[in-house]
Image (cartoon, rainbow, N blue to C red):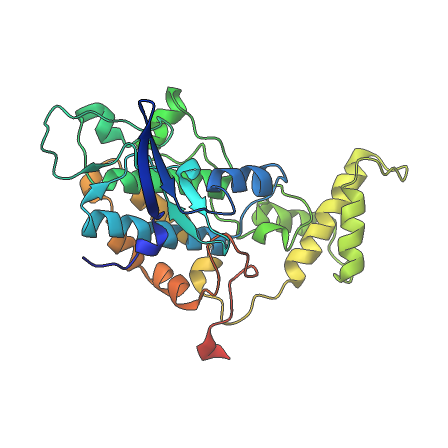
Length: 318
C-alpha cells in the first residue's frame, strides 16, 4: 500500500464498547477542526484567507483523498470543515469516517448521505457512489473558504452550485485584497472600478503610501471618528487610500501567475464541482496541476499557517 498522504489522515489509536455504546480513540489534534478555525480566525474577524493558504488546503486535503481513494479504496462521503482536524503544526487531518464506505459497493441497496451543503448531485439524483463525490465536496469547501460564504442546504442557490454555477458565490480569489495586506478593510474590491474612480476624481494627487497612510485609512474606517466630513467625503478618502496602497504595492518577480491572475483558483474549483462526476478530476489529477506541484514544492508550513501573501520565496530564486 502506498503510504503517501497517510499523514493527512487522523490516526486511530483504540476502540472499545461500554454500556452498549462504541468509543473510538484517535490522536489529539491540538488546534481543533477547520470549521472552528474559520469561524474564529476568518469569519468572526471579517477576513479572507489569502490564495496561498487556500491552495495549501487544496493540496493537503487532496493528498488525504488520494490516499483513501487509491490506497484504501474508500470514499469518505462526509467531507466538510468540521471533519478536518488541525494539528499543532497547522497541518490538516481528515477524520470522522462514519459515513465512509469501500468501493465498489457490494450492497446495491446502500444509501448514505453526508451534509446536504456538501453532497454531490449524483448521490441524490442517481444514488451513484464514486470517489469523485469527495472531490465535489472538496470543491464546495473551497468555495465556502475562499468566498467566505455560508453554503445553502436547499433552494435555488443549492441547485445552482450543483449545476456548476458559481455566480452566487462572488469572487473566489483574494487577488485584489491579499488578505488585508493591501487594504485595511475587508470589502471585496473591484480594481477596475477603483481605477475609473482615480482617473475621474483624484488624478494629479500624490501621497506617500507608507505607514502613515495605512494609519489614516484605519482612522477613516473607524465609525467613532468624526472630523466634520460627510459620508461621501469619508468614502472618497478611504477609496483614495486604498488606491494608493494598491498602486504602490510591489509584487515580487518570482510570484507565480496563478497567485495573482485571479482566475486559477476559480478554474480548479469549477473542475471539482463539474456536475458530471465522470468529468471531475481525481485527487491525483488535482495534485499534478502546475499550481499544486508548485505549492507542495515551495511551502514551508502547514495549510493554515500564513507564509506572507505569496508563500515563501522559492529556493531557486534565492
